[in-house]
Image 1 (tube, one colour):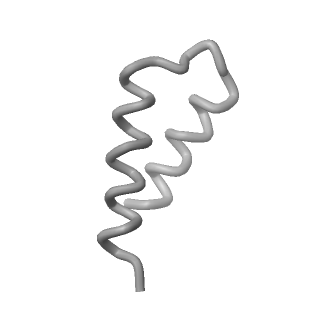
Image 2: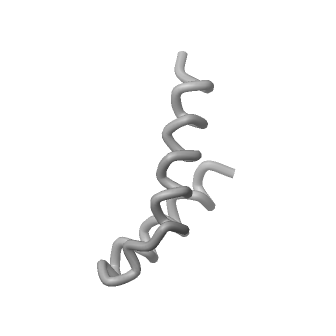
Length: 39
């Protein structure tokens, strides 16, 4: 799951003009996911 999220994020990073509310919402949920699964 995490690998798929990272690949989706990377595809957005390649196109900086796609910094959209969708990307911001993804980043927010991704960091919440990371924090929840931190060791």
